[in-house]
Image (tube, rainbow, N blue to C red; front, side, top):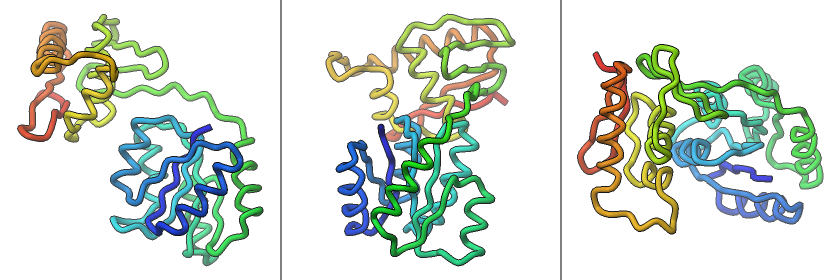
Length: 224
């Protein structure tokens, strides 16, 4: 089972990671909100353990981010902000549990197990942009309510872009979604797939554009 630990204090991150790994969890670490958001989009985490005081903001933002992106994450807040008001705020905003620092290792593990025992709700996750919808579990694309077929790599490109529609997605992340490590990728392979994707979207009047951001990546947004 995979867990994301969002903690900028290296000593605490190492301690918690070692504790969880001894219990056979797979643990990824992010030191800030930005890296955590990328990780949450690229991986399926049953649990996100997050500090509130991070270099680029309050870790509680990840709960809101998960809700906006329709991700199925459980959240355990692990923070020195442990006043009653802070705990109530975190739980009211959607965290599953909240434990203050410093903590006892056995209590932390017990709370992790308790959160993970709770049944995971089945949520139909859809992303939309313009007149196009992408259904996460079936990986089905509809435009104006009608199904439209895309090649495998074009579907992967749509999936990664529509999750972050309106925001720039770096090129490397799109390539990782569309091509496996074993693929021999030519210099213009991704551009060719994006070009075909654009043509299909235009032909079906999806009201969606895919635009290049030079030197960075691509952005999907509604055509104005």
